[in-house]
Length: 358
Image (cartoon, rainbow, N blue to C red; front, side, top):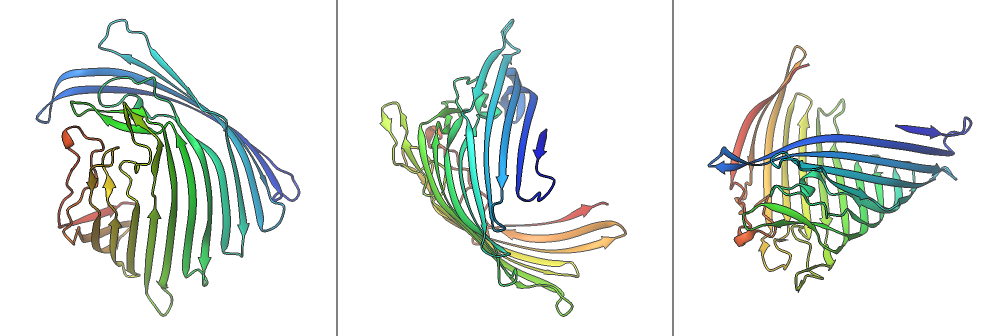
């Protein structure tokens, strides 16, 4: 629910928005003994009630045709109530998570009709999720606090050369406190703890080239997209027991990712794309003593779309991991017994049909 106030005349000059949201959720969670894929004895039978309230206001002001300013503020509150149905007469365990006041300031300056320069300064807030406050070990963790921190970002986005080149470049600096970090117990069950502070400075770049656009003379499109993420994130205040991890790379985050995709499509329904992904090595424990090596993925897909009456059918065939790399898309972080690795498939192919009924 929100209210919008703005002048009747010259409506583009300023605007004031006030709004609120309130969400209620009930989750039933059960855990069973795993007998070779068959559910065995019940281990946990829990109910978790979640209530979340959100109040915000924002002022938008356009002093000139090229400049737009925004200033906003929000208040958040989240309440968890937990009860085990296996324990007789257990009262509801309650945890109220209230955020600090979260301001946000932004500006957007139009360099021309197609290119914009922007800046953001904001205080962020993220309450622990249901899967974090009641994880797979079956326990309730009311001591978890919300992650919070300040973020500053500057960037430029838009198009060049008559929309032939699409551009989005941003640099950001995010200082996070009370970071929520995954842990694994001796039985392999996960749980989460607040683990001090992190520094997350990074760069993101996306450039898309429209090489050929369909027209009366050409019945096909060709575009090429490059994206790059540089994220040398670090722990700045993180200690576990007597071990200090200050300065270590944040667990599970690669330092850089480069992705490129070439798309070709024809108006008669044929399409082909090939993509490459280069990901650097990833630290798998907080001590930064174990790493998953970097990898280079190459994927390709060919498809043909047909129309029959009001329905669409698409036949497709493709190949994945064409360079036959040894890698994982789901390593276990801080795994007990050094069980970090979950190998992804080696070189493989697939085919199928997709049906869209109108």
